Length: 218
Image (cartoon, rainbow, N blue to C red; front, side, top):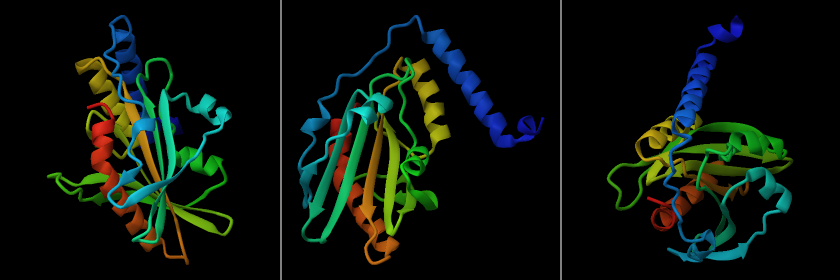
């Protein structure tokens, strides 16, 4: 009964029921699954950021992730004396149990202790409205890092996990599509200055946003 009296538990329950009902209703319909260019073709030189390394993802991790395509790179900015990690996981369908894993669940599971979390807004050059993404400050031992992440579907930037589920249902009904991408950017904290790391991460988001819009399905 305590579970049923919890507002958030009721919201999650309703979302799961709606999601299951919609997926059952559209299960016999063909899905419009996009076929984007491979993520390996994503630019290696972006607005002063150059790819330093393509980091291989272990097969065990890929088996758990179940993404249709992934990208995991380190970019450097000599002018800023900074580096950023870019991770993208693309899922062409979520009908068969494939879905992005929230970094809020994955990072603690990998030994990262959460310190701060919350949404932030970023003004993107050339875009009328700012985007809202998640900011996550974590620590593992003496090392800290700032993570910015969001879900990207059809040029739509989604910060919250609940909102991502809502749009999954809406897009399944309207467009017969359930594809999505998880975009994650990680910047190490230097000299204990989390604000500086956040600024670097925001600068990197501004640099990669337009190439991402061209790379990922609209």
